[in-house]
Amino acid sequence: MPELTKLKDFATQVRRDILRQTHHVNSGHPGGSLGCTEFFVALYQEIMDYHTDFSMDGKNEDLFFLSNGHISPVFYSVLARSGFFPVEELATFRKINSRLQGHPTTHEGLPGIRVASGSLGQGLSVALGAAQTKKLNGDQHLVYTLHGDGELEEGQNWEAILYAAGNNIDNIIATIDYNKKQIDGSTDDVLPLGNLRKKFEAFDWEVLEIEDGNNIEQVIDGLKEAKARTGKGKPICILMHTEMGNGVDFMMGTHEWHGKAPNDEQLEKALAQNPETLGDYPL
Image 1 (cartoon, rainbow, N blue to C red):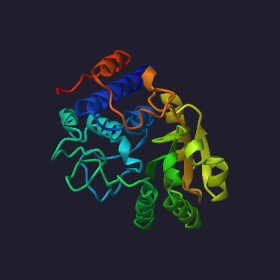
Image 2: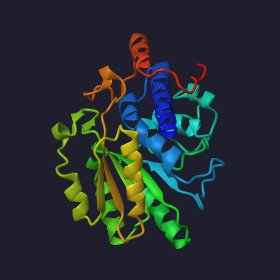
Image 3: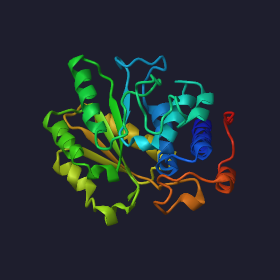
């Protein structure tokens, strides 16, 4: 399947971008970025209907809000390679006066960024406002969001989850990066989340699961299934099971790469596991 091969090659290059961005400035969050690579590639290359001639009003197009903004490296890579801004600009990640800050910001006007998301727990509230605006304007396009599972420990999420169902906001698809890890360890050790599916269902959401969020076919199928369930009176939640650090063997199975950049030797090893496919940008 040539198209699937292209998407996998795209994902491999995005992984290289993530590793090179964080290594170049010795900071950033590679773990969650690597774990969500397939999601971003599927969303921007297969699922969403969007305009690369970016406008903040978001009319007549699908919208995406990244709530767990620390995984900006994967977001920036996919935006650049989807045509929002030059790929070469990835070399400015986290540098002074760069548009590509460690957490996405809006004051520099980076195309594709609709909300500053350095503070966890706020993304769903913002996205719900956008979804309601679309309903009021008769805009049939959808709103997509991504959240960390550890982020759900923030109480504002549950106010928003309650609000969405109570107001029948059925044009939103909220995906949870369900890797069961956060900066201080496993979610079970920090603050157990319990049965997330039952929790969302108890709040009257429609819930589906992607068993392997690092399998791009499953991610595409899951997003298409979620899209088919919109417009029926309930908000949609996807529980997407991923592996933090996926694609780099020594970063997988641990929370330690949540916010730690690879050194020179580690970068070389990681890049060898992800051969160049679309062309690196100059540093």
